[in-house]
Image (tube, rainbow, N blue to C red; front, top):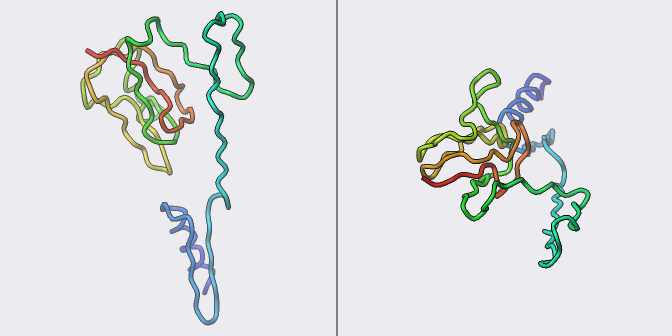
Length: 155
């Protein structure tokens, strides 16, 4: 196989979601892999504070993300979680306006943000009419599946 053919195979693998490409013939074997050999996932168990302990005595644990500051009466607001693992974006391009800001009233089906996963931008839409109370994540921040992106008030 010539170098230009090999380069085109590598480009094909990097331009798609393919993580491994294998070609075998009598004369040669080609294996192209991208990404880490093994995926390492670290999970931290949630830490429950004692029921009677005052808030001032509960110290944050190093290495765990700080809890989001939730406006008063948490049960009054709904959380909108990330449906996938990826990178959170508040606007469609670096020079564009944000999809929404705190205080905006959002209709069902309106785009709230983008979450990029594997070079694909996924639009996250509101499932119901609501008012944005808090935007939990910063622009271009990594997000995990189920992690809260917004706190909203149903309208």
